[in-house]
Length: 256
Image 1: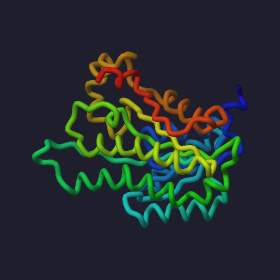
Image 2: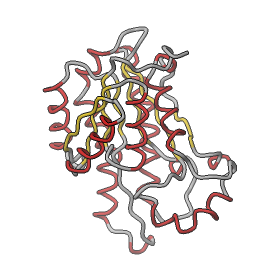
Image 3: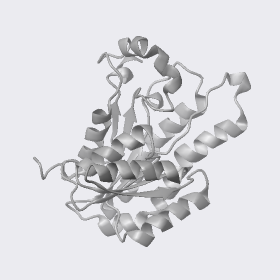
Image 4: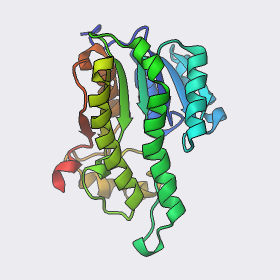
């Protein structure tokens, strides 16, 4: 079982890896043995996370990246390619949200969310195809793990119109990419998290007890929940899974 879930010798990239869900996943990948590249817009924050990962015995490198533009996606792919010939695991986690009443929802806010959450996933994956193809084999394919959301499965309670639409798009893009890339020995899956403590959800956490009571499992998500699911998808254990959208939400998707 140890070898089944091992990522020893694997190279992974986690976008939006400097905080929240991305940081949780980066820690899990390092613990499983992977060398992890952590990317976000703020290099100094990435460097702090990479330092923490190295402090626990992992191999980690910080990279600066703005994935809201096509040029930013190409630049990150080039930075990875300059350092690594192969990329075994790509975690597309970088994302943004925006909330406002429908009458006040700004066009630029809608575009910002869609450009980063959907277009960025597509463009970065495409730009890194040479490294992913070089890593994949019939028995041990390269892996793309897209971070969607339970809000892309069930309508959320908040006026985050672009966010929920973008995550539903990520889920379907995942299935489409999985079909397209299967013959190239690349699997593509999505994780749909529920509520986890992070900077993005900080405004909700004053009501954490009330929110937890509404979740069938009775608690918010924890780092181990996401880390374990990602390691499964990235390891030999998940080699035959592709095109899946896995809710890791404590059962919230079953309520709506």
